[in-house]
Amino acid sequence: MGTGIDRLTPALALAQRVEQVAPFHVMELAKQAARREREGHRVIHMGIGEPDFTAPDAVIEAATRAMRDGRTQYTNALGVTALREAIAGFYRDRYGLEVAPERIIVTAGASAALVLACAALVNPGDEVLMPDPCYPCNRHFVATFEGKPVLIPSGPAERFQLTAERIEAHWGKRTRGVLLASPSNPTGTSIEDDELARIVKTVRARGGFTVVDEIYQGLSYDGEPTSALSYGEDVLVVSSFSKYFNMTGWRLGWLVVPPSLVPAFEKLSQNLFICASAIAQHAATACFLPDTLAIYEARKEAFRARRDYVVPALERLGFKVPVMPDGAFYVYANADGVNHPAAGDSDALTQALLQEADVVLVPGMDFGFAEPRRYIRLSYATSLDSLHEAMGRIEKVFGRH
Image (tube, rainbow, N blue to C red):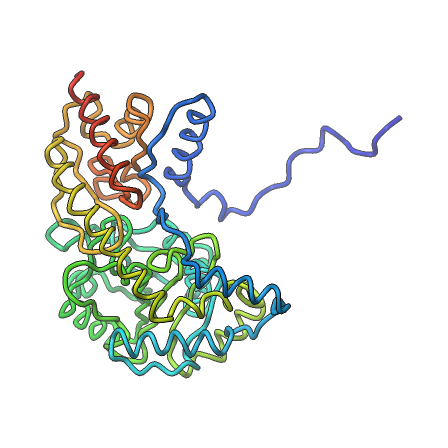
């Protein structure tokens, strides 16, 4: 008896944009590592940028109360009022900035915030400037809305960041704006305050938009960071509860936009996402309690200690760290000089270290097109003991070659 299904029917054709999205090597390596773990290997993960810390008890208790009290319905598309007010208070207390809660849009993670920003600001054919290297999804967000991401090679001399001079030199007739991250994934480097002020001024003079991803700013180790919101209400800032607040799987972030754009972003949020998770929003209000913030600051010091160990450890192994990371939990290291046959080819090297040392690192290929095979990205969002063990394993591998 037939099933009514023609098994010879060809697969449905995918939209062309799918072909434009490059594979995410960090996720592919994670899948390979998972297979090795199923085979009995103990793998040390320094690939995915996910804190090994989880939400503090106060946050979990707030989520439990929300569920118990039935506060699980859809929220306003802009977010729960109490949470938006708490975020505004955070900007006031941490940065000395008065940000109206009405400008804050709570989103389903920073990714949703960037999707909203691109949906609102990018027309087909518009060019958006960003540094090379940068977080790979950023260019895909732009391309999804038929914009053209323009990656500008940004090396150690620029702290792997865009500069006002580079933006001015690459600004063309189709350029619509810039998308930056400070501190950056994959490099852990920040844009210096004076340079960021010049960037905003340069873009503003050309009628463009400046979007700054600040999801790692809470994890800044050298000096007091300055939010890009300091440079005018026309700057859009993205942030998240994933990194500093240790809530990756809760999928919660926020976006600060100019007052005049709030209605447009609300309309887009209503249609694209309805709202962020109600439970996550109610839980996140507890992130800003004094005792909870004290926990986050102590954890930040733990990340700083890991950075201060792992950078010299990598250099002793023959890696070069051309710019000391001042934030996030990444090191972007040049692998040209390591003692391994795959030196100078970070894709081959990371594959070899997974197979020979059960250590996961990420090749620079994920992050752009400017000399990506020379660099690896290491995430130190794991315990200091694991970092010590990983460096020891790599040293043994290099010693055999």
